[in-house]
Amino acid sequence: MAAGPDGRILAVGDGARAAAGRNAVVHDLSGAVWPGLHDAHIHLEHLALRRLGLELQGISNRARVLERVRAGAARLPARAWLIGQGWNNDEWLDDASWPRPEELDAVAGGRPIFLVRKDGHSAWLSTPAYALAGIDPSVPIKETLVGEVGKLLPEPTDVEFDRALSSELRALARKGLTSVHAMDTPRAFRSFQRLHARRALPLRVTWNLPAADLAAAERIGIRSGWGDHQLRIWGVKAFLDGSLGSRTAEMLDGSGVAVLPQPELVELVRRCVGAGLNVCLHAIGDGAVRRALDALEPVAGSWARWRPRIEHAQCVDPTDAPRFRRVGAVASMQPLHAVSDRELADREWAGRTASAYAWRRLAAAGAVLAFGSDAPVEDADPLLGLAAATTWRRRAGWHPDLALSQAAALRAYTVGAAYAAGMEGSVGRLRPGYLCDLSVIDGGRVVATVVGGRFTWRRA
Ligand SMILES: [Zn+2]
Image 1 (cartoon, helix red, strand yellow):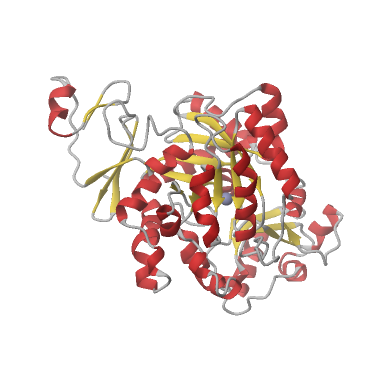
Image 2 (tube, rainbow, N blue to C red):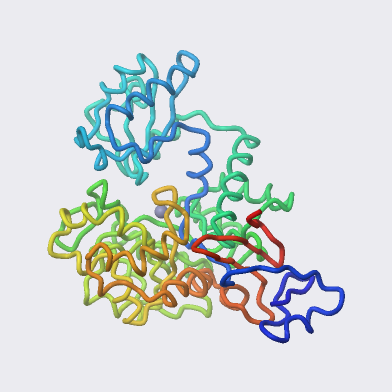
């Protein structure tokens, strides 16, 4: 492979050395050279904030979580907020019941505490935090309330935030990622711009703005694709339902929560089509997925790069699978969710798990798949995601017929994800004229990452 000074591929294969010319710099790389891997659904803002807050992910014991909270609180000034994230009561082996405010009060005294659940759809508050929010402590903090209470939290400075975000991006480059589709608020977008101005973005970032900011985007007249190959704007992210873990996924049987009712969803899609903006519709339950497809059906083929996306699509009724292709909806899915959710899905979606995380069925029905991680909900490592999408189901004995081939899974992490952001003409394949983005894999691990012909990571 040879890349030119513009960061594009000159030639692939035997002719590469000749195409590069006599002055070429030659790098010897052992291993398989893949088109650069994408993460089509990631929360960089949460990842950055996580670096600034108390990390509770992966602790499988309630008492140890509380011990960590006690230690974290002890390091802070007396009245300061303790902010953290990552707890998951379903993983607590000693006591998996829903956590209570008094437990936090007992270990951290009169301090306000705000701890977001691993899935981001619930928060665990101390009694002083409830008091500051003006909410009765008996009310569980779920869905929109999480954001409401979140507004009370002290903000990190721009410098702190940029530093944390920058560390995260470099960590993602080490995992072999060359492009990410960020589902973040404008705070992250402002930080992306500052980093981009300093040429400090080691990956290509496609930003999808929250539906709450659609009016601002309409007013300015920003359209999908605005920006450059390193940083651009694409879609509008809207939540149709909640999550499996928080028991708020909207199901066809009537269970769960319709966060965005259908008339409002239809209106949102109409406005986005009118504004030239794509949509990223978060839909986890089969009920929410059906509503997304219903809303997208009348606007199918609105323009050449109309790439409406259904984010997660964790449970899809079999009759709805062929509709993805018909309405042109991309299935933006995260294979590691299946690994984490398997037991929960067996319990909550009993009898429906043959339709859950149904990558193979959706692909067979002609849907474009775009894979990502939903980090920090799951690990952002795309090699773990690839294993989950391909070999894991057979090993786990969980609907192995829904597993993908390695080639199909790799397409979802490369050309499929590129298509989901309208970039399939410039990234996602190794072809002359394409941007030279590579993930080099050797011995089951990433040994080098290249973006625009430059190394963003190379194993020593
Ligand atoms: Zn997400």
